[in-house]
Image (cartoon, rainbow, N blue to C red; front, side, top):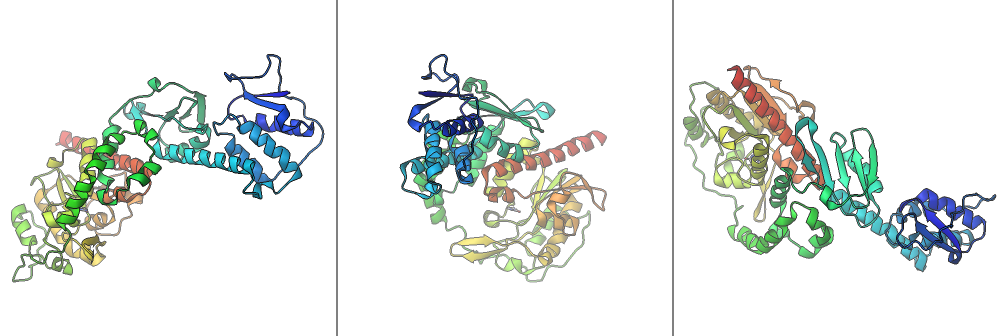
Length: 481
Ligand code: URA
């Protein structure tokens, strides 16, 4: 019997060298026992040594096999090394063996590689970082229990995705660490080493509750995508059962509400609105009444009502969104629907109380197209943004905020009076003509629409950071006053 003892569970190079030596020496698969150093079930005698000398000679195997082997070797099945060697042995005589989809060895190796890839994908989706320390000292640590030996395979994804935050992913097999420059690995640890909860936890739960759509619930499909074994490490898992339990009721309520039927009744002014320019003499209540009859663009015709801004009459910050959505149109209040919930959570995290800020929209009527019972949001045109701008200017002149936060491209266009790309302009204060400042950031609905959970979490944090910048500016101006 030939014994091969690999250096560790994912020692592909060690396997490759030993396999090449054994093939060239003509050692049949049934005459080799494979194990890993430190293996509790090591069958090798104490003096067993892996083949170290490379015999003369060469042989070719398809590049496809090498690719498959690199992935399949990460499977936890102890038989993988022997299976790979058997395939290698057979491939010398049958170069097209991998094309034989009914061959048991080919079936096994393909299934192993597939399971590894699936586990890698799950790790990408279900790692949840918890923050340890604050501000500059912050480090993000996650606990994950992979099914296979995939930490090394999955780590580059996290290094790319979370390049500017130092993180560690702890697992029972191996831990990966990123310091902003390189990934390093240390031996696995127990779950007790991982942080159990932090302030990001609540963000995940709130976010999950926001995106959960009871009308689209398919429990089986959901459990396939997010198998129960991952739940114990997901902060949002505590929401799953109550949300599923309440789903039927919530979906019934959604249907019964038929809330999105366009309303015809709208209070209209007999006279078309007289356009005014901003004056400090406007008071918010008279402005609101005047705006209720606005006909400056055709959007008033289908909307339920003008949704005017809301908040203290001398708020230091004015938050500007795009236009009311379905819920806001019916309630007559800005940001009360899903985007509003997202905004509320982010404001809390940034240390801003919603009741201290004035919240409004660049366009004050809901623009939509009807689709059955649903009213589908439509982006306002430049003409509509321009037509509505006097309201924003007059609100601002009445409130006199020190800072205007424009959320999304429409708001930025309304506030700055020109098309303003968000990514190029976010992250710094912009001087406005009247000596106040503006800050542009994304719209909370953008966060709701992102299809990828990691991207959502990351973008949400960036949004909170932008709001924190607003809070810091406010503190500074309060001190200077
Ligand atoms: N989106 C907005 O821009 N404003 C709202 O009030 C609601 C959703």
